[in-house]
Length: 98
Image (cartoon, rainbow, N blue to C red):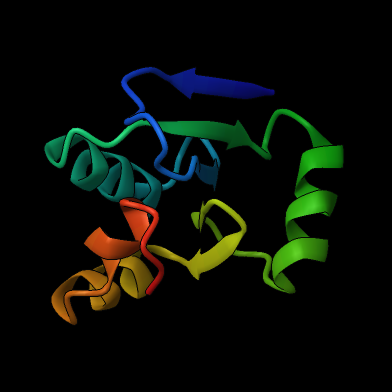
Protein backbone atom coordinates (compact mmCIF):
# COMPACT_ATOMS: atom_id res chain seq x y z
CA UNK A 1 0.00 0.00 0.00
CA UNK A 2 1.48 3.32 -1.07
CA UNK A 3 0.69 6.59 0.63
CA UNK A 4 1.83 9.64 -1.33
CA UNK A 5 2.64 12.79 0.62
CA UNK A 6 2.06 15.77 -1.64
CA UNK A 7 4.22 18.79 -2.28
CA UNK A 8 6.74 17.44 -4.78
CA UNK A 9 8.97 19.93 -6.54
CA UNK A 10 8.45 19.86 -10.30
CA UNK A 11 11.30 18.06 -12.05
CA UNK A 12 12.75 16.65 -8.82
CA UNK A 13 13.01 12.87 -8.51
CA UNK A 14 10.35 11.12 -6.44
CA UNK A 15 11.31 9.97 -2.95
CA UNK A 16 10.04 6.57 -1.81
CA UNK A 17 10.31 5.27 1.75
CA UNK A 18 9.70 1.61 2.53
CA UNK A 19 8.55 1.53 6.16
CA UNK A 20 6.52 -0.15 8.89
CA UNK A 21 4.12 1.27 11.47
CA UNK A 22 6.41 0.76 14.47
CA UNK A 23 9.79 1.95 13.24
CA UNK A 24 11.42 4.91 14.99
CA UNK A 25 13.97 5.39 12.21
CA UNK A 26 11.13 5.54 9.66
CA UNK A 27 9.53 8.33 11.71
CA UNK A 28 12.87 10.12 11.98
CA UNK A 29 13.44 9.89 8.21
CA UNK A 30 9.98 11.26 7.45
CA UNK A 31 10.39 14.06 10.00
CA UNK A 32 13.73 15.02 8.47
CA UNK A 33 12.26 15.10 4.95
CA UNK A 34 9.24 17.06 6.21
CA UNK A 35 11.59 19.63 7.79
CA UNK A 36 13.09 20.10 4.31
CA UNK A 37 9.62 20.45 2.68
CA UNK A 38 10.39 17.28 0.74
CA UNK A 39 7.52 15.05 -0.34
CA UNK A 40 7.66 11.26 -0.44
CA UNK A 41 5.62 8.16 -1.11
CA UNK A 42 5.45 5.74 1.79
CA UNK A 43 5.24 2.02 1.10
CA UNK A 44 4.16 0.10 4.20
CA UNK A 45 5.76 -3.33 3.96
CA UNK A 46 4.03 -4.50 7.14
CA UNK A 47 0.69 -4.22 5.33
CA UNK A 48 1.72 -5.86 2.05
CA UNK A 49 4.04 -8.89 1.93
CA UNK A 50 4.51 -8.40 -1.83
CA UNK A 51 5.95 -4.93 -1.19
CA UNK A 52 8.32 -6.42 1.43
CA UNK A 53 9.55 -8.92 -1.18
CA UNK A 54 9.96 -6.12 -3.73
CA UNK A 55 11.97 -4.03 -1.25
CA UNK A 56 14.22 -6.97 -0.41
CA UNK A 57 14.80 -7.69 -4.10
CA UNK A 58 15.68 -4.04 -4.80
CA UNK A 59 17.91 -3.48 -1.78
CA UNK A 60 19.11 -6.89 -0.57
CA UNK A 61 18.19 -5.59 2.89
CA UNK A 62 15.41 -6.52 5.30
CA UNK A 63 15.52 -3.49 7.61
CA UNK A 64 13.48 -0.31 7.34
CA UNK A 65 13.39 2.39 6.37
CA UNK A 66 14.78 1.89 2.90
CA UNK A 67 14.85 5.18 1.05
CA UNK A 68 15.00 5.82 -2.68
CA UNK A 69 15.45 9.13 -4.48
CA UNK A 70 14.26 8.38 -7.98
CA UNK A 71 16.04 5.15 -8.91
CA UNK A 72 18.91 5.77 -6.48
CA UNK A 73 18.86 3.61 -3.36
CA UNK A 74 19.99 5.92 -0.57
CA UNK A 75 19.75 3.22 2.11
CA UNK A 76 18.38 3.66 5.60
CA UNK A 77 18.05 6.66 7.89
CA UNK A 78 21.73 6.68 8.90
CA UNK A 79 22.76 6.47 5.23
CA UNK A 80 20.49 9.40 4.35
CA UNK A 81 21.88 11.49 7.20
CA UNK A 82 25.48 10.68 6.18
CA UNK A 83 24.67 11.92 2.65
CA UNK A 84 23.14 15.05 4.16
CA UNK A 85 26.21 15.73 6.33
CA UNK A 86 28.44 15.25 3.28
CA UNK A 87 26.38 17.79 1.32
CA UNK A 88 25.27 15.17 -1.21
CA UNK A 89 21.61 14.66 -0.29
CA UNK A 90 20.24 18.05 -1.33
CA UNK A 91 21.69 17.85 -4.89
CA UNK A 92 20.29 14.32 -5.17
CA UNK A 93 16.84 15.50 -4.06
CA UNK A 94 17.05 18.34 -6.59
CA UNK A 95 17.78 15.87 -9.40
CA UNK A 96 21.45 16.78 -9.77
CA UNK A 97 22.86 13.43 -8.65
CA UNK A 98 24.97 12.62 -5.62
